[in-house]
Length: 67
Image (cartoon, rainbow, N blue to C red):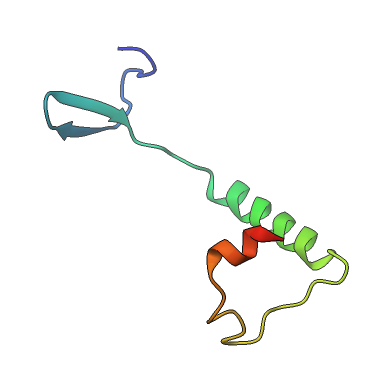
């Protein structure tokens, strides 16, 4: 099996056959740091304006891409 090591956890899916997928593990502290960094970058965007509630309720997605 490629990509799996002894002791790895796998998710088993049964369909047309049996599929083994590795369970994704992540570092919670690294994720928190990345999210904080992303938030800081967003806060530093000039002229960032939050939409008012309901402001885009009657705007179709196609109209957004026409301009």
